[in-house]
Length: 175
Image (tube, rainbow, N blue to C red; front, side, top):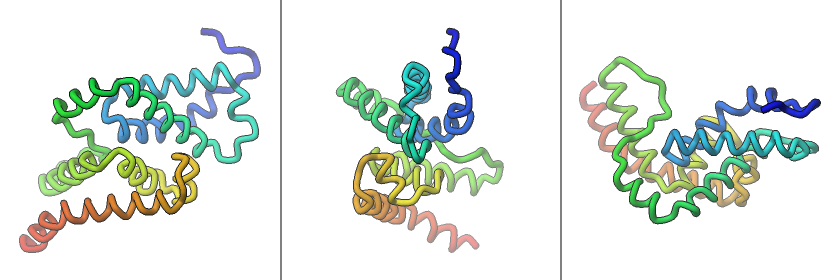
């Protein structure tokens, strides 16, 4: 497909595709869906280059597009996704591979705990920890209030803490 003259889709893609992919993968839990959604976002930008005109924070705008696209996908799929999610036991880890068996075990437990969070809390945790966004930036990206973003983050941390506390205590005993 030949791009129209003057359309610079490469720069936004180069700058934002990787973090958007990580965000979408963490949200959708499915690599094929993530790739489809990422493609959908950048095709939309290629077709409507004026979408980015006047946008103050490109990353937040693109995260909002990604979040909305993911929500739309989940709504379209409905019951079929719930069945597939229950069927899929595979945990997608946001962590780089390591060799230390204790570190591998800890990361698997953390990835599992993250996967068990509700999608809205998992999205906020991802944006806060991996993208290092403020609650105001998260709120803008997800179209929620900063207080809601902070609450979802706090609830998620409470759930992670409760889930991982026994593992932490066991690791302290082993030292």
